[in-house]
Length: 544
Image (tube, rainbow, N blue to C red; front, side, top):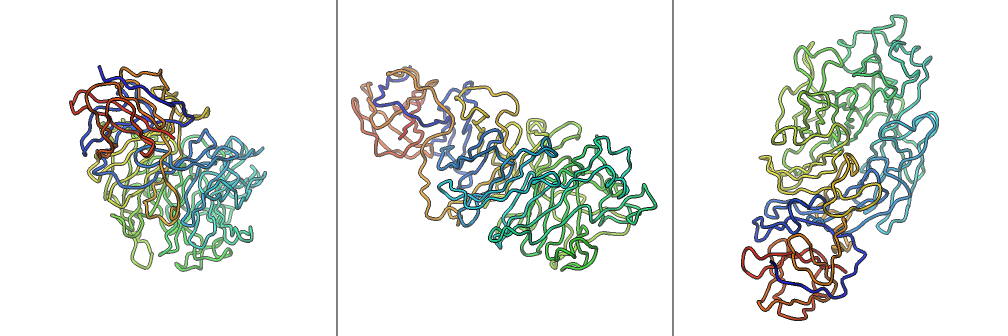
């Protein structure tokens, strides 16, 4: 039995989170019983965990959260609607978020957004742009470019007649329309579209020889086969779900789920060049500079087999980080047997000016990965949809297993050093110990920002408590192993032996005496109470 604690002024509106404590770098008993702790911070090895703040937006709720590595909430941004998937903290401190809108044409498309916002630290919308009508609609991702412009993915509507006129096989139009993707770049200062690129301008097909784009897809890997389908021939033909920008090469990478491919295109083109096959820094207009993941799409899989399976979150690893210049992607593994997800890192066959090598009648390489994270066993990490990844400064990789809302940080050797479970569903933060329904706490992807990130400069990042709700309990807590004590200001310690309060990094903060102890000077968060006897431990959550 643990010593009794009596709580003074313990009522609180804060949402509180459970963790596994790391004391002096070593795991000790969890703060909340292992069999009961299901949400929030599950594990942290502070000796190997990359410092920073993790941003995420639960897909079924209208609040974006920023947490520290202890799982403590440091900031949040309420929104007017559900996220249209993407959310990022920009270097100027503004939050870029997409917002779901209703749309009579694209309304049931996966990943629908339609509105893009820039939001200041206090939650004020400083810029908003709607790209949603019966002819087009933003979906999935939108990113901020170095020049301050916003680049986004969108569908455009093509009727059955338009699709057939372009060479689409009518048997592949079971929904009587097609929604090819396009990219647009918006200048928020003028609300003008300053650049755009359309899949529809770069087609090849060998179904209808009367069309101008008739040709052999195998001979034109720079073009997109209008009649390639993966599975059911849905209207959402490409289903692009992620963007990345390389400022050194002035190139854009696009993750195209329905093709299980990553595409790279030239951003240096004018709008006219982007619609053509010539011009720009690389002389190819808007044609694909590179593609990787599924050579079956352009009929060259006799040399390299399929590598990607419904992937998300393609990115170039940033300069200065381990693996800089290589590409990283969450490979969902949808359709792979058995079904399991991985994070894949690969070296594209590119020279320093930015040109990609392709041998005669061969597929784009590489044939092998430079690094991969795989669960143990493999099927223990799987999400058929959404999800993401990010390389961190210490060489670790941050992973979002999207459907289950589970976040990991793993070392290059694949060891998990941080695990967090999103505690927020459509009904808001849930109680510790709750077992959530599948996909109830889904998250599109996450990002971690280091303490010196420019977008955090000058911000107060004091932890205010965990997100999920802990039971408040009664005036006295007899068993801290299963019921954490929630304290506000005063802790009344009833046992005769002295006790000690450590934080989760193992630092001693206070020696408790029998009787009233003022803890109002301690930062809000989770503390570990011990009498110095190993088996006698408990948790105290100090709130404000």
